[in-house]
Amino acid sequence: MKKNIVTFTAAILFSITTFGQTTADDFIRSGNQKENQKDYKGALADFNKALEIEPGNVNAFYYRGYVKFQLQDYASAIVDYDSAAVLDDQDAEIFYGRGNAKFDLKNYKGAIEDFNKAIYLDPTDVDSYYNRAIAKYNIGERESACKDLQMALKLGDKTAEDVMRELCN
Image 1 (cartoon, helix red, strand yellow):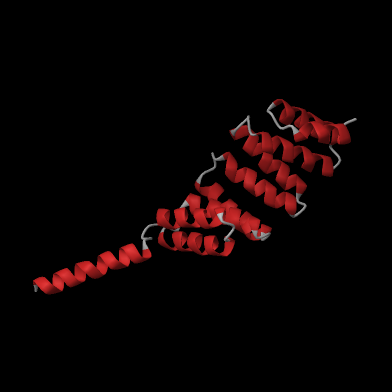
Image 2 (cartoon, rainbow, N blue to C red):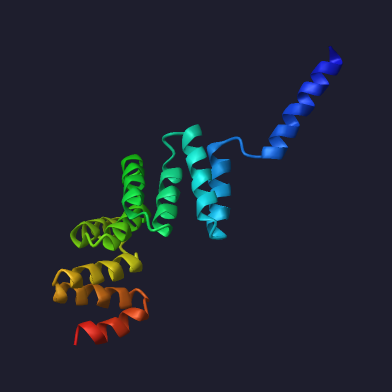
């Protein structure tokens, strides 16, 4: 009996250390490492596994949306950002990410709405000001776009100055 317990325990420890990932957070960490190495398909598999383990994990939805964005699967990225926003409607990064996906689908008004929400949640979000400016410019709201570029510059975005010279003068 003792031998069986030792064998069983050794098998469990081997499987845990061999596979290493047992929780949604483990898979999210692994997915983030793969994403940092530009292994987007590997990261996507890890985020999918995290969501199998914990279907309501906001971080898994957010990061999977980000990876789908990197893979230029913008519509699917939006679906994941939508799920993340339902779970946490106070995270500016979720709305910023979804705004970028909408922007790349040329849904500029939808992008502006998301950048508005990101800015509301984080008034110092320089990237949302900048991207909202470009979206506004694309729908003909030049004056408002220039104000956003001024704010982006004020918040430290040095490229906003060059874009302002080109679009606002």
